Image 1 (tube, rainbow, N blue to C red):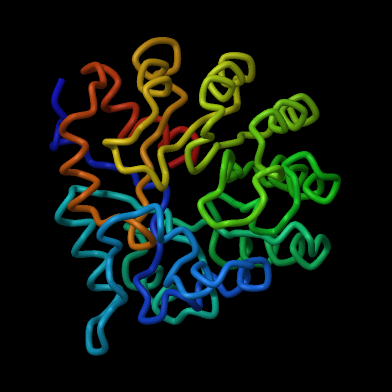
Image 2: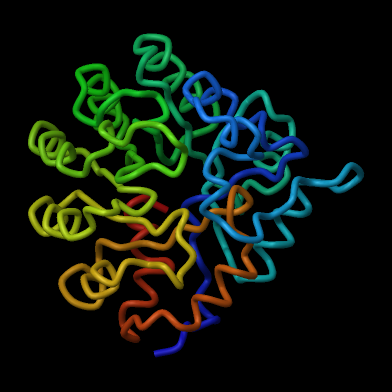
Length: 286
């Protein structure tokens, strides 16, 4: 079935358009060793064509983002929360029904990180927390991660986590999909959403989702043309409730690219509402 354009979409990965994208990734700068990566506007730039440009002076980033959501029938978008970005705060204030918040944590800074999540959750009502194990050089099953998993269970928040080979040129070992297995065993109440593809271990990711009821997959950072076949087949069979849409705007993909490609994704008719909306609605408790 062709992509149904009448379903109000829940977007689980969106950022605020920026006038200086490199600022968003400065935490990675000390870990990037090749000169090309240091010169990129964002660390995985080599993997993407037609990366959305930085926002021009005089353009309102909030209006630009909302316009993109309107054009593609995105009803709700999960925005990476940055209290130091006035545009992020303005989006939440001016469009409280349009945006929900996800806070990224640094697992190398355990107690301040725990305190920050508690504080921000009390202030704005988080819907999720997230992390980037390869970027912070902390494996998914590292002991430093465990307090954050426990807190996610305590606060009843899903945790979105990058898995698989990272785009930035940093070691992949912290994100090997096999590490998720131990975490799900130790935290049976944790809702864990795999981000950024799980490649080249998509078959393993699929097997783990069959095994663990609270383990899910999102399509962030992949143009629909490149969704792994194993994931599409899984969504069309036993995994219809496990796979959810996520984009990558404005980091690496435009919405024009995403939804042009979406027309050719071979999901079954009954899968589309779950993929575009219902699975995220359930996981994020909307």
